[in-house]
Length: 409
Image (tube, rainbow, N blue to C red):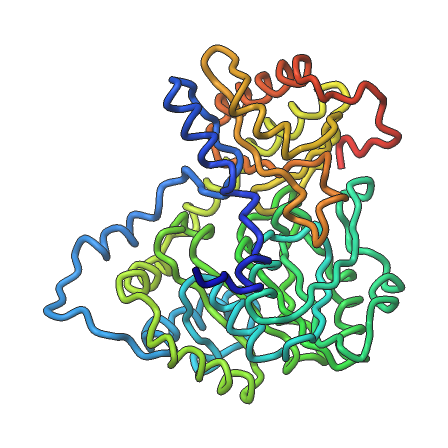
């Protein structure tokens, strides 16, 4: 029997999805599973996008241009200009989700063995994309005690080697919900400029900022215009995860031409998804106002509730719809599986993503979980109650006081 490749053997399982069989088994037993493990919003997709799909009048579903439909790229450029990002449609390549944009960018910018610095914890699939591209993720640790703020510039500088070719951030962040300030981004700008690096900025949660905080795009940083790669997606913005439409955006013409070769090799992005995404650009501002208000209330319900549980620490995120909580347990992977296999409260249990998969090495996230506040508030309240009772029953609870607290951050 032929052997599987070493790359295939090293490819990590998704921490977000690997517990699905246990959730399915719990549901088969009649347990209702509260899904806080995945960023799948229950917010309705904008009606204008759904109507565009319903009213498609095509005789043939053709390939689109490899860069994406011109009308959509023009519309998307207008969207960016409205957010202070000055780009034209020729500087945008439409991709199969933000995932493909990241993978194309990594393959175009880096050679095997090159190093990419990423503040951790980070979106788990960054590990997978880097492995696919043959590059090495070099983590720079942010801590729960600072609410996952950007580490000091000295920490970045210590990690830069001759193989360092880029920095990757997610802003607002997945899994932490951390929102970078302009001062933090300018710190990154200086590092990128001084060492001539690429700066990948994953900004798919741009709209979701709370408490008066404003999003600052890396595309607005002066002096590194040709270094910045913007990664975007319609998945979370319009609650259209299944559309699988993203964007690769840069002012670097040579890089665009290179990425275009990868785009041509995969032929084209999805036609139906682009039709829906172009229509979604007409979504009224009131949609986002309502969605942001709802997520802020959900955030407060979940995070404030978690911080009332003895031994639990959860910083208050300023963006996205995730939070990372540290629990008084021995191992989050074991606890999350135990919740699905051995626990129920009034017929309910909770599914979360163990945070070990959001680190380059699993150790730092051993007691942490990521939760997505993508359910209605009454379900989030029930989830908090389930976790409170579960931590009273779980045999692996560590009965010690945490040495720090970030309540209210």
